[in-house]
Length: 611
Ligand code: DQQ
Image 1 (cartoon, helix red, strand yellow):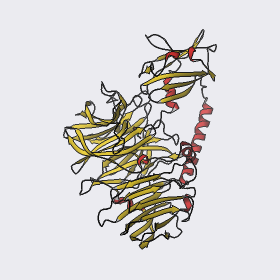
Image 2: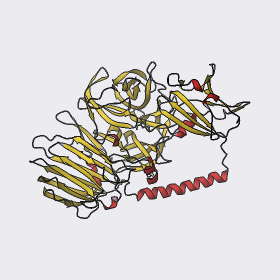
Image 3: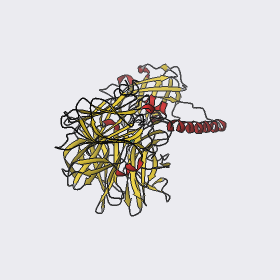
């Protein structure tokens, strides 16, 4: 999750708490977000810096402390719902604006400003603002629709920001997909649950927002991620209400358009006593016999990411059992698993248990991985830890469910790889991955494949090739742009070498994206470092080990959709990537080798249609 945005920090100020004093003024802060330790404080009133010696802080019933004494070794602990009075000695006793900068131990510097006397908008101004808002949003949707980087067969909302898939469920012949959605801007902020339905998991109908924060309730600052369960009363949804993080329960209305918050929320209001946690969110629910189980993602301070397990018989009263699995943030083999785990999901596939985790590894680095193991008295005993997608930070917060055919199908959030300014300029951010089918191989390993229904998105077979490739570039689909396409190939090499797929305007263009398989090093790669020379796009080389078994062909399925690249290899490897070529509309596909002769059993290029 991105760092705390300013609009949330502003909520720390207690409305109308400003008091004029003879020697300055005072105001109150009330923390409803998450406990932080303040190690330093700076305040500006009407743009004028206040010396730290003129600032003091006081909790009700406690001694006043000068801000000068506050340091990393002697911080002020701002716990939840404990108003803190800040006194400011200054000649100014009726400021209009405050700028606050708090140095915190957990979250670095938090800065925000408060307008103390906001002007009331009149009726005319409100109407005018609403009308310009509607016009702006219509124009924005048009612009997004014509943006070549915007995908057409991967699901997205019409514009603005989306992240995690939520609450996947089948109900009365339809699959409902919800997702974290900020309808206001192409940046993360106060999430709602967007909503779409499908009968085949690839063609989607967008529906109005299903769940919005309820003022004064546990989800007033956002409806964060969660999951669904089918009960005797129909589907129920468990999600994270913030702030603080709690578990809320909602039920669809009769038309299944809105999710309604139920009486008695939140159903879990705080982390278990005695645990010092970082994060407490993303309920995932399932049933065993007469009992319901629910997991929450968290981090145990000083230890690492963890999944907490709860049990219930009525879905309203939940008993905390124990950690389903506790990570170790010092562990680096085979890779670090981080300090906090988001969106955990435990499920069984033919007797093997899998726990999917979206891990906050270090600030700014998040990726998805999974443990495979056996269950022992409701603890997971893992014996494998692997990446779920070698695009790492691009594929995040996945959620799977059992579809109507009983298959385990997963969706994930395909994160942008450009900066926030570029997202704002584009007017949209975030894409849903294609549905991925999860199965178990005869070797009891996880297999990931594009769902077969994706083939119904194919429009036209643009080109088909059989033969060999050499160092001379071969153009597939002569001159046809491949902005929204699927490339499917089977290759074999008896003498090693490298098979190279080049997405570029010409085969020797400076701007290019390369998908390659190195038969000598058994390495699949996606290289976007030269896709676009503009520094707002963070191209990189992504590599994944893929050892072919004796006689096994290289089987690739490459999905190109605007700025989305999903590369599936041999049923067991995926690299998701984002790429933003300057001349996206002019991309062509060239295939060559590094000099070796590689046999192409089949190579097909399909154009793809809208979801
Ligand atoms: N996104 C949600 C959280 C979740 C995170 C908030 C993962 O519930 O932990 O938008 O991307």
